[in-house]
Length: 100
Image (cartoon, rainbow, N blue to C red; front, side, top):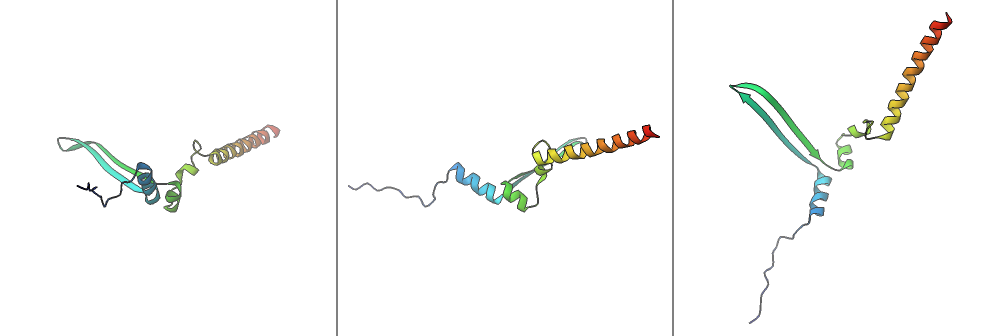
């Protein structure tokens, strides 16, 4: 008697494939937490989570990490330059006050 193997039409995907699809397309997870006591809102939290690749996020106009000085050396440099300019202006004002 010949043994027959069962063939499944659904192809198994691994975690890397699923992660690649999610990052390529993006996924939004949303939820709300509300705590009430006697019809009085004590706590209301809205949670929105976007999981996407950097390229996809930038296509959507999301690039907050580029302005965060903790995550971007360019933003940190810009922050330092602004602080230096403010200190130079303050120094110039103090020097002008002392010369008069």
